Image (cartoon, rainbow over all chains, first blue to last red; front, side):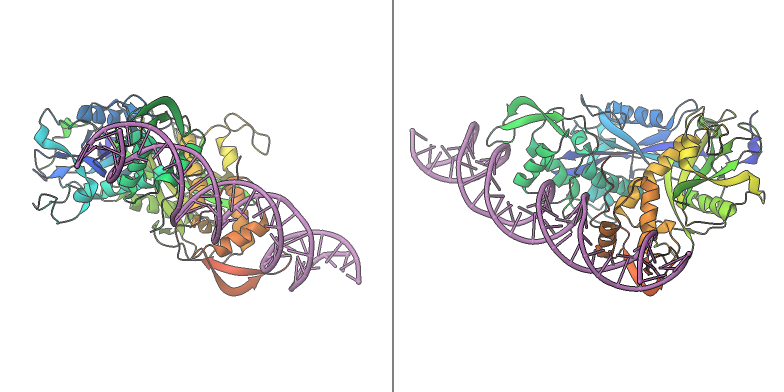
Length: 252
Length: 252
DNA sequence: GATCATAGTCGTCTGCCTGACGATAAACAC
DNA sequence: GTGTTTATCGTCAGGCAGACGACTATGATC
């Protein structure tokens, strides 16, 4: 017994993705250049329509794979083998958020390790990793001095919400490891926290904290000297998803 | 320049509400009885279609007012004058969640002080406050011994997600005061935490904690003896929304 | 090869917060 | 008055976090 279609207004439903990674000590997000109006030529978050037979999480995972080649992991599953963490973020449905028609967008948040340069439809100039600070500053100037146009639609708000979610979630979950490759050092993990929070952390206290939190890190036995200096132990992400006690973001 | 309507599948978009309150030491949710198929006669969460010119938050506030008479407060605004806290919870869009057609539901979470009995369309027998434990137990028996049918659609999942959100959010925010009337005692606030978390808390340590957290509680100067025993100081919710340090849920 | 710079790891100390719990205070019921 | 209930203050020991000293193991430089 289908509804009478005239009994409710029809909506288009899309998924938009906040894909975050840490590159060169900076928190970066994936941005794609819009090829058609509205906001033609402006940067936007990747996204697309949800298909008729598709769950929201499936649609987000499909878009993520199309844009980055990443496979998505469910939130509950520990991150492994270069897959990305993917979770629902929030839903945006202001009647005027898309000038063409009524579009409700279910935004998702993905956390990925550092990746090779992205390709959007094979065209590298239409997709890039950009520091979130740069994407979020309104009407400012980028690192290269050229003016920065704000993101299309309400994507600046969505990105800001995604960044805030990531910042708070690495406090009490092991999600920071989603930014790291399968094997990583304590120092690399610390640089992730420093980039996401934008603060400097004491290496000694950080080391004590993460190695002392049960289930967070599992030593693999290997060592590496990637960063120079004394070789560091390698770790994998442990089974714990909730950290107890949590990592504490330093006061303002 | 509207989209070609054939370029994407049409969706119906609804808002569903998890309205929580604390009654008689139990965390309760608002449930309404369905008057038509599917799931006719079963209990469900209140909700309805988003209108063509309505934002998602507006739709949720409208539904909340229709069901309870409560006015909604934005998440950032301190709770006052018997308004309820209202925030977006999550969005549910499984293609099969409604057997009639493709419906995407943007669930919202509302926290309200103890209220008089609800009325749904004026009919009291079709709306009630039910303990969440009772609504969530699958195929069990209620307090009166009669069998409990599970909630309609995927509403058990939505309710469970809402309860979990509330449980974790009162840890690090002042949201527990949304369950209290404008003026309340430390003991009343403690009973809110005990009901939501389902644990017993030490009255002395709780008192020290909440009165010592800056910005959480503001004494009004009055006292009350509502609960019997020695008169207690009355407080209002302070301006702080984020508690630092947070309230800690006792270990399992 | 000695020295230096870099990064990692282990300890120590102090202050704060927490949980456990004793003690006192102010109302009501009998 | 005595008992009961709830509120409120205090004390004490253990744990964790921030500040920071010390030592280790590598590569770079002279």
